[in-house]
Image 1 (tube, rainbow, N blue to C red):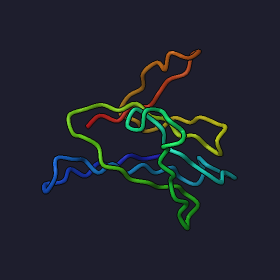
Image 2: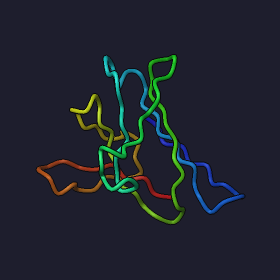
Image 3: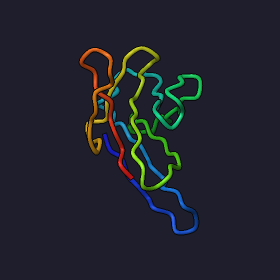
Image 4: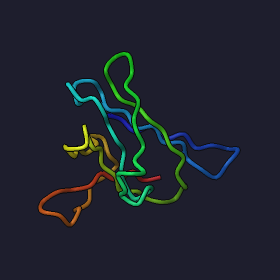
Length: 103
């Protein structure tokens, strides 16, 4: 899993690309990115696109200087954290944690 950040000079945003490698999403048909940037609303999830190598990838523009909690939802049933998140915080549900991207 990987998170890449591209700070744009033309706009006050950071283009953040989220990638899940094929081995992390074996037999998965759909990966959704859900977090604070879309109100944790599955209806507004960002669908990651399946790549030729079996990985899933997607990008979005976020405001710099902030932190965003997020998780991946695999096939609408299994939650997954990003193994390379900047940090993790308690989700407040059971012993679950959320991934965090720091910009």
